[in-house]
Length: 392
Image 1 (cartoon, rainbow, N blue to C red):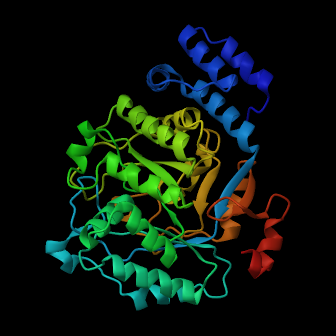
Image 2 (tube, rainbow, N blue to C red):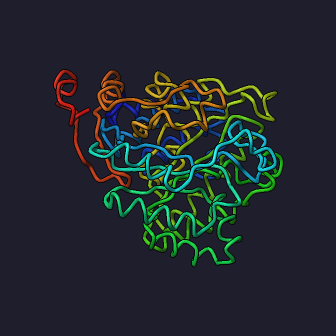
Image 3 (cartoon, one colour):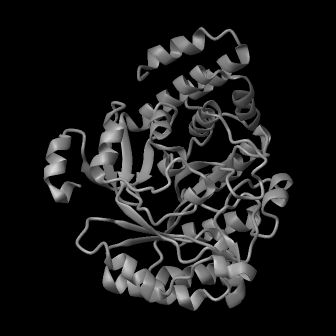
């Protein structure tokens, strides 16, 4: 791994491509790279060059630290009023017999399963179900907080929120305030897909557009809520669409500073209406993470969602700009397993996740949702963890 400024300077100086050299110099001098620079990196930079720059950037920000948290997922339903072409998870409301719908009691029982365990976050996302309205989720959040007040609720994409607010006939600002007061702590990054209308209209035309997605995150940030952002890459988009997507996020982050993490999500082609599209290669995956780290200069963290990539490829991303591997998850999450992801039963113990990070000479650090450090596992032996249930 490259951590020395002199080493990375030497790599940039030895580059014979003058345009790549100029972009490299910008990065070394902590100058913002442009839209055209982003496209040029995708089209012309070798993976080795991108990896060296992205790793240097990652290490200059976080050293060897690699973050994770102890979390679990609740998916209220996979019944959905929308029909995204890339989705293998949802079942249209018209065919809801193929789906599931959880009651408030069902979801509270999932939370209760973790009583006595040191989880810090529940992640709640799912389909857009017409019966699960604003009041339903207000009651859910209040019930969770009444049972476990300290549990951080990270919930809902703007796709869900846009529908909920429109149905309740409230503004984005009103809706976010109502949910926040009920216990809604932060937003995940889903539903972003690709912002550019050229692609969005082909893969998810009937759900909230880019402007609506960004407006909901902006409203959350104004309430003091943090959020994440994603991109769905590796399908029918071009490099210009990826950079346009990152540019819009970067602009909002300049304005609000409310984003914690950027998460590139790999398109998976099993059992959906885009099964004819080949999935991206591992090389293309690493290129996406590396350019993301270089372009998203005002995002503190770049995350790789290990259930989607698989454990070994997730380890590899840690040399291409990534400094976060999400969390312990739990095998309740189905959004990616149903699409053919590497992990069909995504769950890892803390010991397994720490071991995964240490295997590639990184320092595992447990965080909460907003990146307050809970415990540094760098100097804790795996044997000690296995023997101590509180550490696992």
